[in-house]
Image (cartoon, rainbow, N blue to C red; front, top):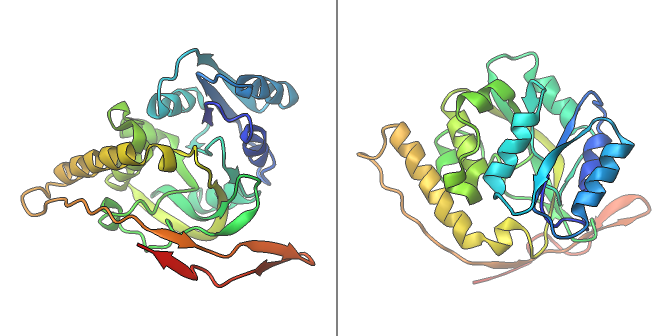
Length: 265
């Protein structure tokens, strides 16, 4: 869990990992040049729970890819996964993911479904990124292995880890490389809460993310010797969507309006 200026969400993100039903874990945290109270929160968490491993931070940001790599380099487990410092992990995420991977040595990575939450942690509704059926070919045009991912640590090392040259798509690039050396499988369970707010990378750095994703895909095509038969075409299609919220009444979720009831552009 690398973090930078996430004082509003960091404790909730970390505590969602520490509350896993599979408690034999370590939470590796790295301060990527925070200017707010995030580093202090991380130190408090490390003092409260000896499973928190706090990697020495830096004064200036090194970027997502290098920060993520710092965490992976410090991790000692045979399986690694990333929880963004503004998101939350459902309590059974590790138990279910590890339970699927351990009996099958051919599995290099598993990933789960997810839902969206707002700035206050309230559930908005189901996510859409992980709904497409997985295949190594479909991954070239759709980052369906979005979250939560559990990967064998030796596989991450074998494919070279996180590439800083595609910083804003380094996680996508890693998944593409893993898909070329091992089996990836989707777990049909909603185990990750993706927080929607204006400072997310997908919102604040969208054009850079698209640029780096294109480079990552083109490199994957070259590795797969596809460039003579296929060309990558970029289609930008902005859209807006209003969706009803889910609210709890009597302990049961209730959707106020039909999902995706109004779309624009």
